[in-house]
Image (tube, rainbow, N blue to C red; front, side, top):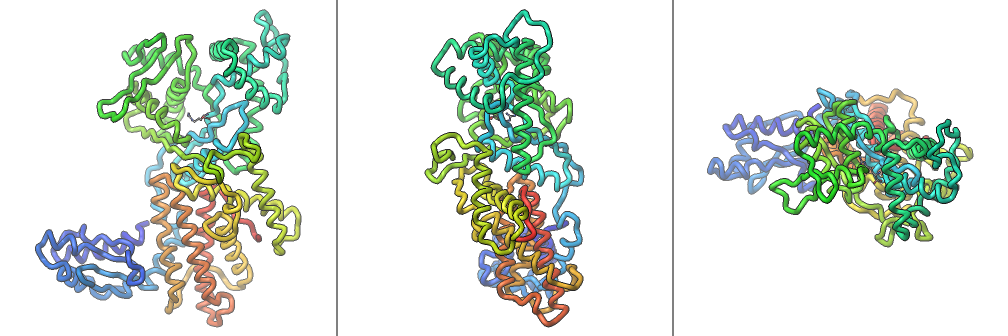
Length: 586
Ligand code: ARG
């Protein structure tokens, strides 16, 4: 569906054309002086130079051509040559009617769906999920939902970190603690025990201990590197242990993501790329793209236009082990084979930007992806505490995601005890969870992804201001009104006289599809957040000034109800795309 602004632009452009001017001059924009008008066209200013006429004369000519039209309440030419436009309530109502009858609320969905893979989440097996992984999950999930809403075939892949040095560290640490285990016995040929020789919480303690040790003990670090290599090469005992680490870790990760309402379609990891690595490296060698440098196998990915030096991609270390570049490249081989995607989007910490520049270049140079495949990196900033430093626990440690979510849930639950609307304990728990989720996700998504932001739960959980709970509060308010209304709810006729608050609300609603389109094309959930906030504010002003249920005129009452029901649909659709939902009461 055409956006409102392009519909009005088409009318004004036609008038420019009818006067013999370039129709491109008829482009309409939102007014920079909302006190004077809603939209404006500045084309006569540019036209003045092209046609050597006074801009005001051009504006008057065009105005004359536009004439009386049902779309406009007024159009005036003002000095030095602007056209100021105010839309008619009738036209706005008609536009909103078209939005409300469209299953996608007027969004300009894809005619030919694209096959898209989104690589997000990226947790590391055996390391606890911490807040650093939170942003990827929240932003990636929202973008996945938006892409899908636009009709694309989207696969969300968690891309587990399960093949790196942390595995070697865990293996070696466990070996030093319990050398008698069969996993470490080279001569052992039998079946390995079904259950892991440790619990999840032991595992979570083993990794940090081993990581610390490797920094102090060079020999241990060396052994861990070797173990990583041997694991990758398929050493039986290590593979068995590795499988058990995964079997313990993955259900826990799944539970955590479930709690966040984040859902992956595919649970592949770095290890799934292993089989593609050897043939890929052969191919790169055959194409003359891989060189040996200081024992390692590298690929030069510099380009002439580079402003600063881009280091080579390291494909294989001198000891034969593979690195992050290698698994990411081989994963692209796998994705090409499994999905032949039109686009692969990575939602990862922006500090990894160089890594992805290297990977994308290497993938293109070696023909792993087709030239038309889009490789995109969406780098996000850091979630900081109030001190401006990366968010930590009160004791200064790394904040685990589980604990963070619990703290937010508890804070919201505590606050909900003040609400007299809820008496049922189960409902209170469920409602608190929904509010906490809105607080957490909106607090993150309302910032432009690439920026750092300050995590402030008191602010995020507030029912006032630019917060998730404020949106929920407005949705709940509309639900309450609708529940008390006994007529038929439908977006039909908007009554003749429209108050300024209603007009403002309708204008914001009419920009819905336009902003949604931008959020989609720019992969920018923060735009959707801003729209929700504007909508909620406009609804609030309308609500405060308007008797809705007590409006005596039946027709007017019905039209108000139809209008706010559409606000509700718009807000609910948007928050669903952001990844959270509203309760019945709060
Ligand atoms: N596991 C990585 C980390 O914790 C993130 C993975 C991002 N995705 C990728 N394909 N490299 O830093």
